[in-house]
Picture 1 (cartoon, rainbow, N blue to C red):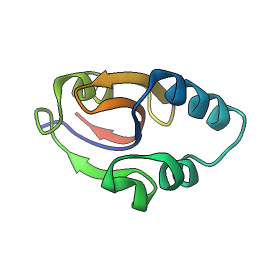
Picture 2: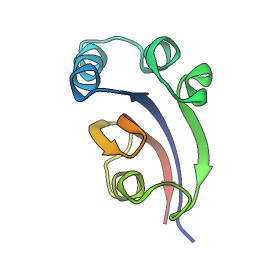
Picture 3: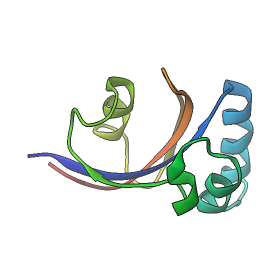
Length: 93
C-alpha cells in the first residue's frame, strides 16, 4: 500500500503562504520557517508529519502528497484548516 512522508507549514492566508514559499525558494530553511510560522503543532518539529497512507489526511492534502515530485515545495494548498506549503520527503507506492 502507498505511503508517504511529508512536512508542511500551515498558515491562515494565501498571501502569507506565498511569502513563505518565496523565502524558501530564496534559500530560507523550511523547518525554521515551520517552527516560526506554522499554526499546526507539527511546526515544533519543523513541520514534519511523519509517514501516512492515503486517506489519513484531508483529500486536498492527499492529492498533492501522492502525486507531487519529491523534495519540491508545493502550494499554497487550501484545506479547511487554512493554507499549506507541502514538501514530500519520501513516498512508496
